[in-house]
Amino acid sequence: MQITAPQQERFVGSPFYVFITVLVGSAAIVSAILSWQAGDVAPAVLALLLSIIHLALYWLNLRLHMGRGWRFFYYPAQSALIAALAFLPYGANINATLVATLCITQVGEALGLWGNTRRALWLGLYYLGLMVLLMTQLLQGDVLLAALGSTLVNGGFIVVMMVLFNRQLAERQKAEELAVTLEATNAQLAAYAARNAALTLQAERQRMARELHDTLAQGVAGLVLQLEAVKAHLAAARSERAAAIVVQALERARGTLADSRAAIDDLRAMAVTLDEAARERVARFSQSTGIPCELEVTVNDGAVLPTEVGAHALHVLSEALTNTARHAQAKKVRVRLVVKQGRLELAVCDDGRGFDVAQPPDAGHYGLLGMRERARLCRGALTVTSAPGEGTCIQFVAPTSEQR
Image (cartoon, rainbow, N blue to C red):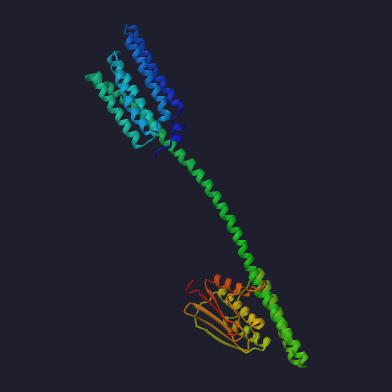
């Protein structure tokens, strides 16, 4: 893993270069003093000058190492300086020690700047080859082998320590990045949770609005129709018929109250089969309105119908019949309910005055909206076909458990 520039500076840092400066500077000063004492003034001055240039390039490289042009200048320049220092008249042993020190520091710098990367590996091999080449020019025989062996052991220990330190730093950086990622993920999850809570609350509000409309609104609308029928029968002196409708209205009021409580508690259940519930709603519609209603029910034996789908279908049926009674001025209604081949189909058609389906509904009228929401919740579809003077047909289609 290659480390970015800020991480590399943080990784290497000034302490490493201070150590190199002290190490190389000490070696240069000692070598210069020895040359001075031996009467070689010019080599001593030259050694100090080359060492100062060498260390200055080190410090410049700390800031400029990312530039491609700088790298092409820096590494050849440092190699030339090491070669020049290797052949100053210090003595073969001192020169070999200086070469080994300078080459090892170059390898350490490469590991510090570039981490455990291929670039650092190639630089390390390059300086290792340069060190061996220069030392073979300075030493011979057993002395050369002993010097190379000692340098490789000591230098190898330093290189291993740098590699392990690089790996430890890389793992630390990964942990820090993971911590940042986890923090961002936690924040994102918190945002998702808040959004989910808001959507849940919105969905619950829509459900309650739909349920209250389909229970209270439909129930009260049915009661109004029945009371109007009672009023008409009383005006015509048909008290027995009026009394029978009053009994039906009381039953409807109790049922509406029970449905409202069940809707609030979300405890609705289909106590009867779907066809029986559909027949009951159609019969109640005909008795309340006096409008003939033809019912066709086909439910295959063994068909699996979820309670949710059946409840939505019955609510759509009730809403369609209520709209027919309130707005259609129909003379006849036909209801078709079919459950077969993993599919529920409900159609409620009348011969009333119809309406323009392209026109938006009046304010406060949520019947069609509620029916469409129920179709969506069942992964089904609701189709409304109507035109002025041509009646209305509402079709509700939903998959049953065989397709869910």
